[in-house]
Length: 414
Image 1 (cartoon, one colour):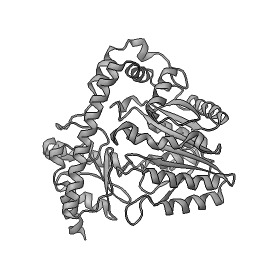
Image 2 (image 1 turned 180 degrees about the horizontal axis):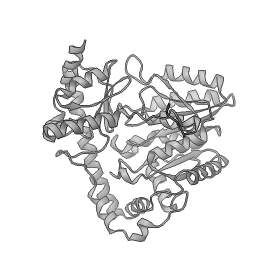
Image 3 (image 1 turned 120 degrees about the horizontal axis):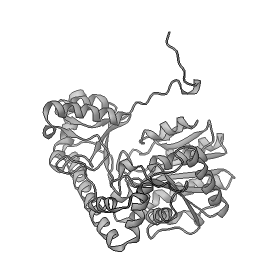
Image 4 (image 1 turned 60 degrees about the vertical axis):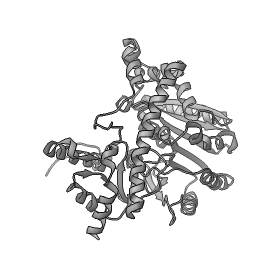
């Protein structure tokens, strides 16, 4: 009999990540057949048309010019103040809502999600998100002692399913006094979907009905891919609805990340931004998140925070950075549009895409279809509800034909 030395609550922890599993299979195929013959639609990073990791030249230049003291010194636990101000400004652009805001630096967007779940979901209770979701939400909830549950993200017309969302919120707040809701929008992972202005009005109306009964509603908006969703102020217009426009017992948090917008994935730098009508809520937010930072990573990457601050404080550097990032945005849009156009032409049911790194095809046979695609040296990610295709990592030339091959594989399986 084997012996376990782990604590009882930790003994069954096993991380099974479909994304990294699919990418591993792709790497093996590339080694055997050659990278030029393989299509890697698994990984969530920007790849150029030669299959190399893409990064922004301005980010590289500024980072290499930074003094060692900026790279290796400890940072304050909550983050460098100028960085927090810059991250808050970038989060809202010209759409900062009235009210009070707070911010804490986090280990990427994942760290922001962790802090929101750790501090704004009751232990043993349920956190709500859509049924199409990034799997790490569930890992975080389980790690901190919560349970993730889902509403149906799409209705029968593939619009935001406000009916099921409302019903699920009603159900949970009948059993719970508070609720944390996670919405990943715009440029949702894994579908590329985004809530409309009308969708946001409906969501907030649902919250207000329960807030009027004394329930506490905490909302986390995951905006990891927002800079790949369209013009910066158009994509952030919904944020005006937060803050002073909501009662004190509806608290909104926003997960900001440097990973995608700055092609700085491995530096693990982000922030959790809070906005409320109440100063007391924000003061509490700053304190509880600072405590959680000390208890997890203590403080985060000073160099990355200094880099973002440098870019945002110099107008010429910022303009160069925005031009380069915008070029990447258009690259992803071109690739995704190829897929969506060809999906329409061949009759493949793809979910609505507005922006971001990914798009998805709903199917109950995702694993089988992905196995079929492997025969054609095409590698995508099989999810519970369908197939995720990473537009960010597939060159335009290789994107042609993927939709029809998925359709053909679907028909062969039956």
